[in-house]
Length: 129
Image (cartoon, rainbow, N blue to C red; front, top):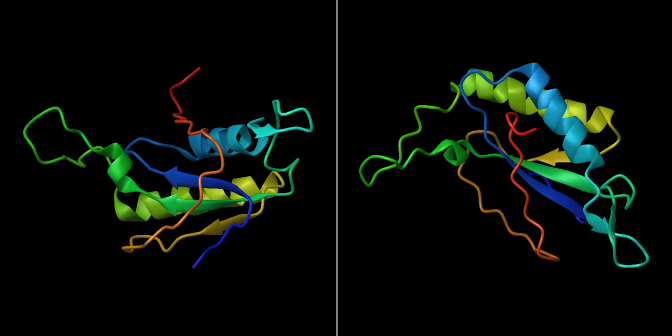
């Protein structure tokens, strides 16, 4: 089971129609995000700059559609094999960009414990500019 002492906790949801290009784009964006404080307390450093890494957890429930009824629909989620392939590709792309990466167990019930050191939570989607 993966572990990351300093860096990012990434919940990755893979939707039907997602591509390797989209996963590569997100890996590039995440590896370079300047969201860690520099010596002056300004968000100016990336996970690579602080010598950190990423713990990537597959999370199909991010694709929940709650527009109808009381039970979420996950019909937008990619099939398990496609999701696994893109999950592994995403992590390989993060590593290629200099961000060490650990993972959860794909398609498993997991307990994820973390300490949120700061108020930063960012949602990234392939469709955002």
